[in-house]
Amino acid sequence: METELSQEEKKALLQIASPSQHFVEGEKNYEIVTEQIGSMVLNQKKHGIPWFVAFFIGFVLLNVLMASVGWLLYKGVGVWGINIPSAWGADIINFVWWIGIGHAGTLISAILLLARQQWRNSINRFAEAMTLFAVMCAGLYPLLHTGRPWVAYWLFPYPNILGAWPQFRSPLLWDVFAVSTYMTVSAMFWFVGLVPDLALLRDRTSNKVVRFILGIAALGWRGSAKHWYRYEISYLILAGLSAPLVLSVHTIVSFDFAVSQIPGWHTTIFPPYFVAGAVYAGFAMVLILMIPIRAWYNLKDLITMKHIDWMAKIMLTTGLIVFYGYIMENFIGLYSGNKYEMAIVYNRWCGPYRVAYWGLIFCNGLAPQILWFPKVRANVKWLWASSLVVSIGMWLERYVIIPVSLTRDFLPSSWGYYTPSFWDWAMFLGTIGLFTFLIFLFTRFLPIINIFEVKDLLHRERGHHAHDGDNEQPLEQAKVPVLAEK
Image (cartoon, rainbow, N blue to C red; front, side, top):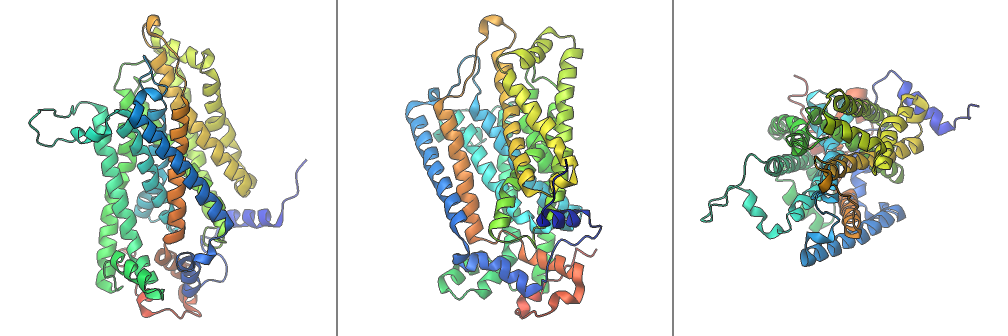
């Protein structure tokens, strides 16, 4: 029996079914957009109880992370559940999981910018920040996994008298350069995009200390045509650098496994399969965070149901690619005729990790199929729950890939079993706390939506009507989209 739709769900269905390309709803002009987004930074009273609850949870879990790292450094990596033959455990599982989450930000920011997709304008700033914080969480794991993070500089080819040169044929070393490059370019891309908005807030605040800090961060931005020209050039260059990183970073992470001889890892499908999984997990995390923040701060006119619907469609598309990868993994293992590869397939189906394997098939393959239905995509509660299920499934995927292959290799005499220890779980929860802590600090002290790009979008959609009632200073109207029209 079909349930009656609420008024909000009917409105959402109308939005996502509308053929119009309007991504800003309601009666909006430049001044209203600036005030709505800028007041989240300049008016600290707008942050209510939900912000404090989320920030407090993040702060508590951050302390769990600090305790976990302290205990690890005191006792050594033996406090984790790793053993022989499973020398990689939850640390590498979580590393790959966090790196994957960071991919949605670069896809939204760089690739959609190069493709001239205007719908990215309301969500790119938040997704970029999420990328940075996820990569920071990911970087902790390989650093601590060595057991001696204080000599991590040995990974770089610096001149030294010991002759301890890095092994450039190791994919683990490729990770160092790929992730550090990804972090650097993403941070530059994020900061360059912030500069015009920081200048706008600098000119609107009455607090002298805040104006001084924002003035330094804005790098002397005046909004002249020359400034906008240089901004557009540098932004496009950084987007061009970031776009291949979406493909290269998780491809190199997949090489950690694919270039080995371990059954279940030695396959050429891993690079595209990992990249699709990264985008899948990244968009799921964007929706998990964006849906409640959109409701708490009343941003439904700027982050519309059309934005959410398109993100859900991308998640569904990448989910189908990932599900195809699961099917091909089984096909390759069985069709190869290799007894070790066939044994891994059967072990995943029926072995001691079968619950995790069938859990990931359900979470990543079957459950997201409800996103085919517009009514589900128009219901933010169902969509939020689906995104949470996908995030759990993507963690289970990494769990199945790593311990199952390591604990069942070529020699039965070396078989073992891996279970994450208490400190594995504590550190994982701690990195979630670090991520949450940084996200909500960002929400409070920096504009989470790109103000000038939303105003540019408003101008494209409504023309001169976007200026109605606009009392802003000339500085904020000075955008000259030099390259955008070419």
